[in-house]
Amino acid sequence: MRFSSRVDISEPNPIAQAEAVARRNGIALGKLNDSNPTRHGLAPVQVPGTYAADPRGDRTAREALAAFLTRRSSDGPRETDTRHADNAGVRSDIADAADDTTHRNDVAGLGIRPVDPDHLYLLSSTSQAYSWLIKLLCDAGDAVLAPKPGYPLIESIARLECVDTIEYQLQYDGSWFIDTAELEALLDGADDGRIRALVLINPNNPTGSYVKPAEREAIVAMCRVHDVALIADEVFYDYALEPFDGNARLAGERGVLTFALDGFSKMLAAPHAKVGWIQVSGPAEDVAEAMRRLDVIADDYLPMSDIIAGRIPELLEAAPAQTMHVRERVLGNLTTLRRLLADDPLGVTSLLRSEGGWNVLLRVPSVIDENELVLRLIAVHRLTGQPGYFFDMASNGYLAVSLLPEPDEFARNIRAVLDTVADMMA
Image (tube, rainbow, N blue to C red; front, side, top):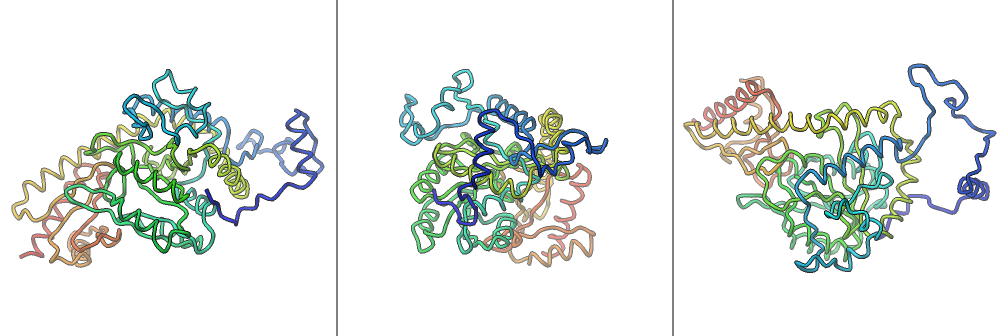
């Protein structure tokens, strides 16, 4: 795997080398230049404790998170290992290249691999994670592959890092799918040498489509051939709506260098909690080199606030119940949406299949201009929205709808859309 040249991993100076030797030998060194006030009795009573400055984030918080992620894997649907050579479960050469220690530590022999807290990085958001990973993998002028339709965040962050995004188009034939032949053509094409990462949103926003097992197998194989890393954004994963069988998290993927992103913004429905994380996995050598360089980036940006990190174990305890609460809301509103669409006398507005997440796409007649539809909603119903072109839909006639509002408000919103469509079609 090739990494960017912007991360300085030059050999440490002789003093730093001597300090590292002392640490390995268990020798605690005093510091003439220790400017950490919390080690000198100067911490305020409102923020007690000693600042450890672990670049990956507070160790206790990462251990709690690792335990939570391991439990989640063992409690949820069994994740399919697409790298088995046959039905007898013989591992392929790619899986064998991964760390044998991980294999030996499978939980109770059930194929559930414990999450290593040392492979986790705590950050304030998945947006920050994208920025760090683009720094890690890309030089200026390099490119990342990103799905369309999709949320425009990735393109914006890449631009700030002087990196291009190249779109790969999701296709719809009654459900959404990734055209892996198109991806392969992009990786084999003129931009091959500068494509350093492929972004998968699992499930995608706004299409709600999970990465299917066959898509995953093909993508991992082609990324491995082209030395392209995977960035898997799985913040909506827990909100299944109408999924197909066999979908699985990409977190823990071992066939290619993979960075899985998740956080409290969606898990707890708490964007103000400002907790996200990166889980690193893949072939052992690539993981070790990636983490060596990612540590430099994390150290330069300083770790997450200890005040926030100290609450992570408590918030993780609340996560299952909170996720279930949000899931009940979105599933209830999805049922209401289907009923209102079925009862609509005009019958020209439809719902595209959404497998997961908390947003869905409505299809309205393409003779209605998306801008005019939203402007009419603003003027008549004091209600705004996001048309399909915000997400680079390939054609006109789409409206993104959130399933989060309280049920009465949600029903009013949908009725306003249906009434506006009827007025514009009259």
